[in-house]
Image (cartoon, rainbow, N blue to C red; front, side, top):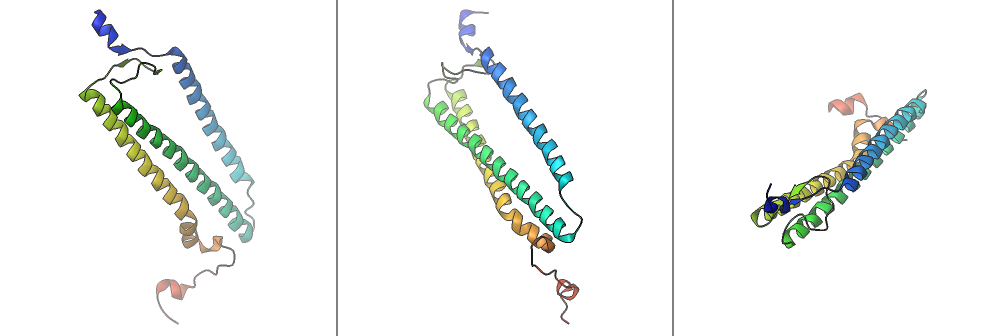
Length: 170
């Protein structure tokens, strides 16, 4: 390989590879641990009486709501990162920047290829922000949706009678 071809590649950093693998393993462990905790949490919820069933269902809905808010927050952070990266890429002379520590070897981009990478990062940021907004909406609307779907979950709410549900008047 010629000297010019070797200079056009930004080499990966082995420490970044190790740290990325460690991060993936930690996230997988947290997901597995969270799933295991949630399964044992569900097994311990009291469901003998209708009141206990309603309380348990509200607790599960609250946990689901918290998970949706957490996922929305993480996705919003990732979207902001992508949008910030798109501005950095567009302003730089070449990408990746000389000081960047990469997971894998990458060809150094400039000109139209660099601008295309900036546009891809900007699109990812916009899609990520839209996804975070959808998750926030789902988390905000979940309690009212569950209330409409299962009115017995709301303390003091009377179940609709059959005549009102069918649209007939007595």
